[in-house]
Amino acid sequence: MLQTIPSPSPVPPMPFVQAGPPMLAIRDLHAAYGQSEVLHGLDIAVAPGEIVAVMGRNGMGKTTLMKTLMGIVPVKSGSIAVDGAEIGALKSHQRVAKGLAYVPQGRMIFSAMTVQENIETGLTVTNERRVPGDLYEMFPVLLEMKGRRSGNLSGGQQQQLAIARALASRPKVLLLDEPTEGIQPSIIREMGRTLKKIRDARGLSIVVSEQVLSFALDVADRVLVIENGHIVHESLRADIDEAKVARFLSV
Ligand SMILES: Nc1ncnc2c1ncn2[C@@H]1O[C@H](COP(=O)(O)OP(=O)(O)O)[C@@H](O)[C@H]1O
Ligand SMILES: [Mg+2]
Image 1 (cartoon, rainbow, N blue to C red):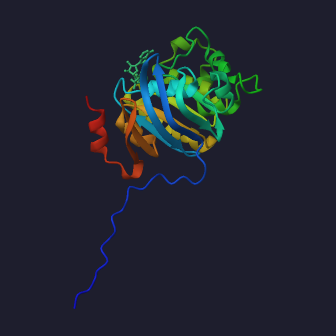
Image 2: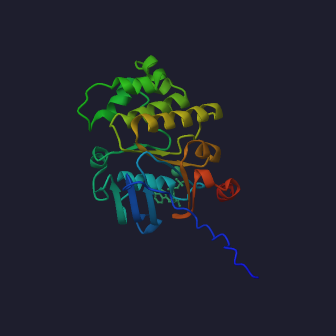
Image 3: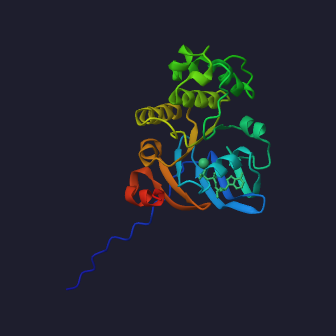
């Protein structure tokens, strides 16, 4: 007698399970430099407390995405919402007030200013006048060096300073553009731990662009790959096919 054995139904790729509305919602985002469109309709949703790595080779659009989110490059079309509020038409400082913070590629700290003065530049949208103690608790080396000229810090210390400055505005979403660039491998691991600690302590969402796969695997809950201004691959950290992502990143 023939028996029908129920065959296992093919498991569809599981979308990231978002427990509620996203903290950052990017919909059909297009951005251009003059006539030259660089982002061709990106859709990215980041859950509260989620860390998403956006990976891609040089010139694929990572920095343009960050700058478009921050209002440095204008939105051509599409929308950006932070915690439900549309921000795509706002000026940069207004976006910071709505909860976005940014650690630019190359860190861009003010090297002639002291460590403390650099962090204070991040306080503009809060009513705080002084650097909150919890920032120095998170980065003890910055407390030690708060009176030093920032240009004298090591690359890793300058990266911590750039992150502390971004956190000074008490963001809901922290954006980091290639934070490991020019940083020693041992310090890169430490930075990964620090970012997760910050996420756990503050409950904020993090979007980090990266080319270093090991770092992304260390920190991210989800990995996206951007190629020529399109998201071409997406995977939860837990299900990631490392070889496949590595192929996207190899020149
Ligand atoms: N200011 C600019 N004006 C015109 N084109 C630019 C500008 N900045 C970047 N691009 C172009 O946009 C594309 C994406 O660059 P970018 O976002 O910097 O990539 P990534 O950060 O991934 O290296 C590249 O083709 C680059 O040449
Ligand atoms: Mg870049």
